[in-house]
Image 1 (cartoon, rainbow, N blue to C red):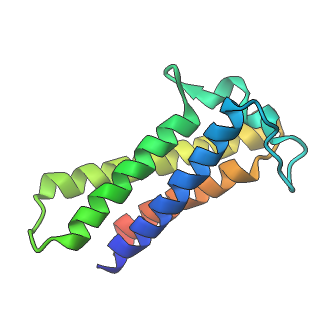
Image 2 (image 1 turned 120 degrees about the vertical axis):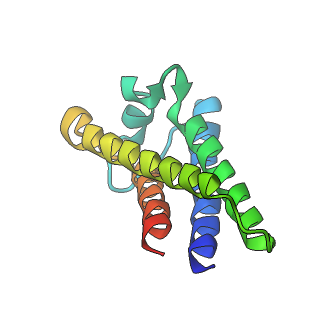
Amino acid sequence: MVEHLVIVGASCLGFFLSFHIWHKKGKQEKLVCVIGDDCDKVVHSAYSVTLGIHNEVIGMVYYGLMFLAHVFLLSTLWSPQPVLILLLDVASSAAALFSLFLIGVQAFVLKEWCEWCIGSAALSLLIATATWVF
């Protein structure tokens, strides 16, 4: 139960964080970062799109689905099928690995930091940790 609460909270935060990035990019407003020189260099880089889909959109879909799935798991007495749990575990692991890859891109390729992106990565790692530890 605790893992579901952690994941619901982290997913909610992650969705709104991804939405914030998407909203700023859509309005062509500068994404202000404190620790980085220019978050826009990160969120508008060649690495901001995966398979033709903007990473913040992928984030909103991922966080939204994780939120809905874990709210459902919290609100039901139904015991979920092992395949559903495995699917959620694989999704959270893939998201965490992808987030680590993107942190590496910021550090070693772009040499720019985006704290919004780092926040999203931290939430992905928290979700994966909650999935596997509890």
